[in-house]
Amino acid sequence: MDEPPLYPDCPKENINQNLNCFTDIFQGKLQNKLRSNRISSLDLIDTLFVRLKVDTIGQITVFDYLNKNKIPPLVFSSVEEVVASLPKFQPAFKTNLEVPVEVYWELPVTINNSN
View: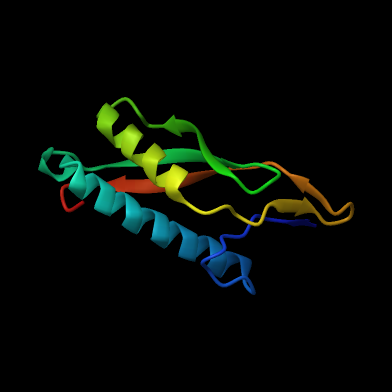
């Protein structure tokens, strides 16, 4: 069994709670960023799937986007700024080897007028 990456500002006892907590924090930071970049004035309601990578030292980066055709470019730069501002994760480990590994996952991000 592998140990997934853990976000430092969230509970570490429960993996699902850690991921849910990270998702809530990320969405909140992105909403604030989009508000400050005036994205909320756009007529836009959509879900952007952000493909994230946590490397072997816990650094998180944007790897790719899905469903990006209808999203304005300013949203992507906002996502990348938020990701760059996040603290390092505890990296994922191969449990049987205790070796840190890279992990990729998709995070659905809601973009709408209320952002």
